[in-house]
Image (cartoon, rainbow, N blue to C red; front, side, top):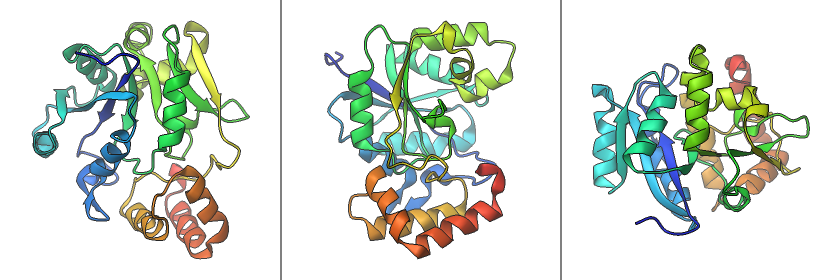
Length: 250
């Protein structure tokens, strides 16, 4: 039975990344990357169930095994139609309101997420943080954030955006690009966050940066990480080096 006043978390996870294959289970400070994401979510009492949405591809069998070992709910669906995978996971577990989580973000912020869940009202279709320029923080480099969305909104996006493959690949793409069709709750991006920096895991070099941050900060969150960036020259050099090597990510 669902708990009252809570929300589910659905994590999209697969091992077939073209830039960094198998990164979701890549060891980071003693446990898999996916384990760090789950660890953050488990600290939020307003999250009822954690659901892993992976694919039916044989390469993703280890993710199902991980879920079994960790006693996590797992749904296996479309390899390429990620939006359909989310919808089917929501049908499987009867989830009508949930957080959309990316499995390569080891520093999703607990405090920001808690405030977001509280702000996401029953009549809202979608809720996310936005920059002063009106940009959705989820489409910026950062990596601290999640999206709150309803199954009804994703069903509408799937129907109206059926002719655009980006709708299927990026899940909330249609919502971002057709805001007048949805009731969107926009939360202001905290001023201490530089939306142009990136703390997600796209390449093996990002693991080195993440390890460095974890060693420097006992409990890394958005505020502490941004403060470290401002005062740590070595970390800045590491971030700059990755930005030069992989400019399309920035």
